[in-house]
Length: 397
Image (cartoon, rainbow, N blue to C red; front, side, top):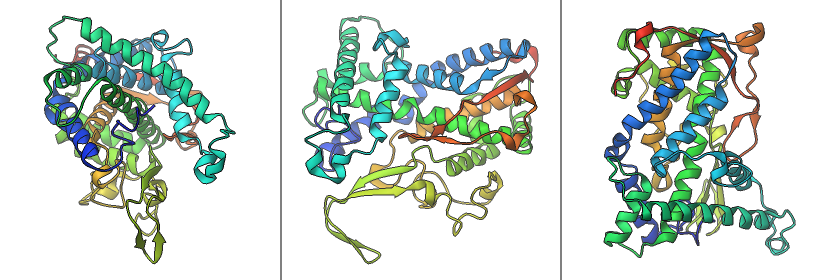
């Protein structure tokens, strides 16, 4: 599925990996490229707000988890492929279902990793399932590339496929770059973006509903900085300091990717332990970010802990690693944080939220679901009430 380790996630460190990461950071995930999709993000967020506003009018209980997941899937597909994809476009099981199958499969412990002689037998059927899914995705990605080759549309904003096709045709890459590389990177981008941002937003909103005082404080900041005559713009985000603390605390308390996998490149000794070259290294970010020796009351959702703190999310501070650290840190961090901040800000600014069935805030469940990404076990349900002026429901395009 990684096309012979031609993707960014699984490629071994070396000249090829450095070149492929440079290609992604310069051409796909640069500030300029991310900003080029700003109008698309505005449009998709506006559609979500309009939908929620209609449901608020009728006092409908909203499945926020589904709404956020759908928004994030649309943002990802529009940015990567240039269009939204309906369920039937990928496989009869459905687009989201197949993506979820891949994510779940990637998180399933493989007995062959611990007992290599069992790998040939494939007792769990993981190899067979992976081959089936690989075939589905390969056909899907080939179809997408063919559509782009045949299309003669002059797009104002080029999606990721357009950009990589141009690189392939121009010979600009510093290494052999063909369809296999494009498909490998597309799969990386799809898998990395589909669940992570949506899950972060879901957990942050869950904690805000569990802590109404924090919700009110964030709404107060939004009203002071933005007002209630218009919706939040991306240009407002840098001025929303409490929002930044809320997002940091959400990322700390709920590690979207709780375990980060690495491999020892050479024999080394860490804290007296000999680690052999090639050993699988698993970093427990969940435990690190809830370490009571570093974080007072680590189980508590308390954004104010970041007041006057220089700790950031870029991997320089090892007590907070939502995007990893070092060479293998997530290259899409800026994009992910932008989406999380924007969506949280819009949903909190535009609406008051009520937990249904008279449930008390702290009774809202926070059970987690197993997977490569730590999602809520049950969907987040809430009743919205629109709180801006009636003529403020349109983002400036």
